[in-house]
Length: 575
View 1 (cartoon, rainbow, N blue to C red):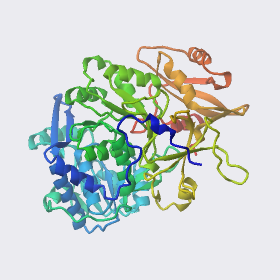
View 2 (view 1 turned 180 degrees about the horizontal axis):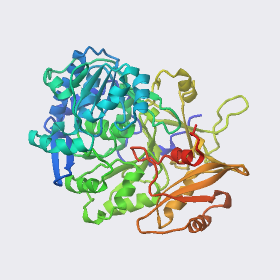
View 3 (view 1 turned 90 degrees about the vertical axis):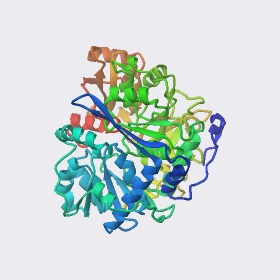
View 4 (view 1 turned 135 degrees about the vertical axis):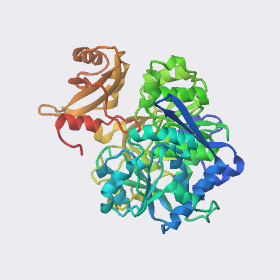
């Protein structure tokens, strides 16, 4: 049974209840924005020059982005790549990522996003699994690509570097420090290795005839691998484009051609790709790009100086901002829209960030398989603490019991009860790449995608994530939700970050363990933390162990990786 859309009465004014399914290629969004705002800055790189403390910048207009991506499309075609073949982008947040993205799509090719700091084995899996024929990377990553190339189908390697869009003098100034940091390396071109800038300069900037259909594969987006070997969601032009339309509808008050987008989320991650890149191009926003999103003071400086209005992020990013020692020195009042995703947003972080900026930081929810956004709190309406918000326009949801019935069917959970969230809508992936069994396990015959997330829904349609089904801790037959314990820990005045997971225990099956990072200068003992938890949690939910850490392991997007903590504790790889 599909839930009645009771939540629509809580949409803020101006948000459409439904959107049209996109029937065009993603590249058309760029074409249309160029026609409206050809001279408007699209990509604004801000690069800190470490030796002298200077800030170097480059700006690329929407017209220049269009022409440069045309050259990339022709360059890839000149190498013999055929529509439908895969090209990996292995770049940090730099303008060339966006240029490459649209160039690949214009040529009818498929983008394979790859984390540029992945190890050789991680990259080998992505390249070989996707059957990628080419990769675009920095010179500092060439050695890694070369080390695994023989085990992949990679034939062409295009090299571009962080400072490529800077002026000639700025490129010279930054070459040495970037080389010392390992971002730039000497390259012997030839043998399938190309200087991307040179290759582009040899091509025409004329538009290429559109290649592909709306249901053609646009992006192979690999999941984060937090539950095992990464697998790729097949995202089409239609699914990504429609989710962009859904997000645009949610940003009902966003001003076309006037918004300034913070480019701190990694573009190669689905959240950064969808919100920072695709939404910005749709609305003609200026993306302020920082290649080092973990430089919190630089982020503060950019918000203050560039007048950032849209600041998508993850909880760790906002947490770093509110706890930075110099946060009071910067004016953050330009921030209007903030959507947090990728991990649960602690209420303490949300409230502190809103006090600092005067904006409205809200929590949303999505997953790679949904291109990615499924729900969000209203940006200017009623946002509810601890909730992931309301389903997006044109999105259906269903909440089912965690356990199937005796006939193997999923049964709808009782109203208000916990259950697994299922999603159906035009933003769903087409399939898992070359994994029909995994696809069938995730998307049932009626088109419902089973997320594996346990949720509840209140009477007004606001959803709250209880936790991942696979991360529930079973203590003596009782379920313990890690997030519930983490919320209590975050409320402790000495706690900066916290993670909770289950550890095998002979007597109770599992026991609760907490890993805690304290605020600088703060002190606490294990007994103090446990006593604090006892004030809010029943006995079996109180951590039996508390381990203090200097930092917690995180993905590049800032999601705390519980599985790595468990693996370090048990010596066993999590399933």
